Length: 234
Image (spheres, rainbow, N blue to C red):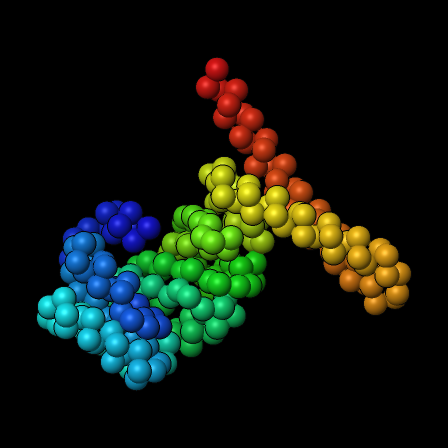
């Protein structure tokens, strides 16, 4: 997604990787010449030491700078065109974004991969004045991951925050598999709650029913769009 985003925004781009860990993301983007220079940032000295060693091994010291930073705290305005924040929970990522108010206006694009709280994260982006431009969902070893790009802008009023409006409109096949698994799991929970019959279970059941309805609505839209696509082909 970084390559696709960069191709639309010219040459000589800079990026910052927040929570860089081993430094592999900035190394990859610099080696592929997707960006010209990069900042590898992390709150821990240990990860930065590992990242520094990897940068040195590849001879990229002149293009990748390492910096100890709590989130976006030590990133200056205009210092990065693209910022990557991945591998964290959605709540933590929103906290980083809110605390990074000093750079939000100057950053041209963002790449996010929240590991949890996807619905809340998407809503949080809207509140911060960021609009999702693209999303992809991938499956690896039975786990599902979402990667998204965002820029300054407004989200649509009828945006599907739980499952991703872009994924639905793109008729993402991995999202289809995810929804089937989601509905199976929710149905199992519903059955257990119905068997339980306590007041607490009844309150929980109402929440599960709403989630099932939302998942079914997303699946129906996905299948309806896929049907229309197949009909146009023949």
